[in-house]
Length: 210
Image (tube, rainbow, N blue to C red; front, side, top):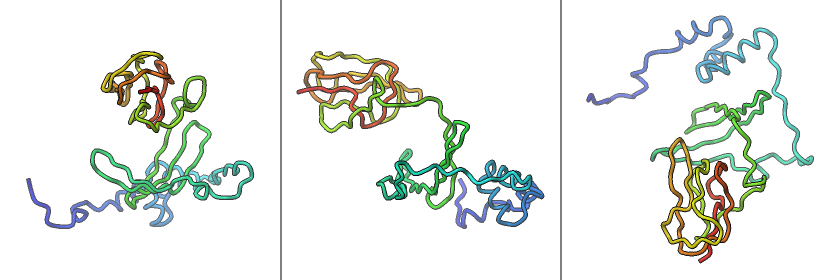
């Protein structure tokens, strides 16, 4: 294994000439080439629509209830620290776009680098059974999950006696099934999920009373 004793970026081959050739006459300035370099798909689309004269501003959604305060003033977080396999990243949400084709665009800064994330809706999540939102877990007897996923099976029913460490649910996340266990000894007071339900971290899925 060779040791890198220079600035890593100095080992990268120059890309500007290739990018200029690839985007061609659509780029009218160096800024256009950089736009294409950072956002290849959306950048090309922007330059093509600009050249064709079909570029229009994105429609802004009205503020709910006539409130003129921006989202940030309503307590909506826009800055996060996330951990992925032991690596920490600072995420700043710089913009959100709503499209009419079932996708939503998020414009982010990841450790200072601009990124665009496009989410495509595959289903609609409305909360617990019957369309009711589940409450947040706050007690040792509240069984919850640490990852979003789907309920594969419910192993207990109301009135059942359970022991700490006993599996009460089986969930599936990222194509892997895992057992969700009771944290205390007690009696199942309520079950808020059924097989096939979508669940999110921090929600009360089962209540156990000591």
